[in-house]
Image (cartoon, rainbow, N blue to C red; front, side, top):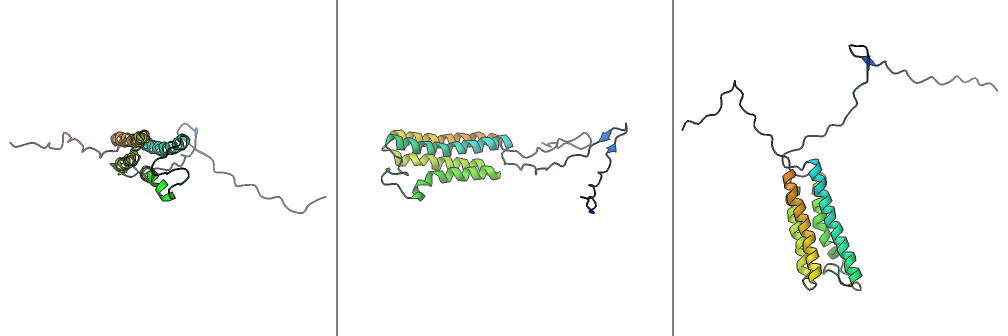
Length: 178
């Protein structure tokens, strides 16, 4: 059976590649997304990952404390006994400060380390409610201390302002007239 339809036209032929001086073809440069430069006070990419990972570890620590308390038959004050759980907003309290620290780390805020230090103090303060179970209180305090260590360590990974350029031989140097 014959068709009277004409075949579809082929795709347009791409333009020939340009050549360098020796005649070798040169591929066009790939398009690369350029990120804006980091501002003074922001964490460098590696330290930002350390900060975020440390605070996700704090969140996991509270989850592990929750599970360990259930298995041992004791519960932190914010969780309450298994037969009479606290309201959800009380159960969520120890997770709020670490989540805020993680959000500040993800958005790349200049204040991430300082927010992390404040969050670690708030997180460690949850140990005060568990003083009737000293083991739980120690674990609560250690979880907060781990967040503090991560935040203080990341202070060293903050970007700094560029130094002032040194005077050249043609520029007069600042001198003291004392």
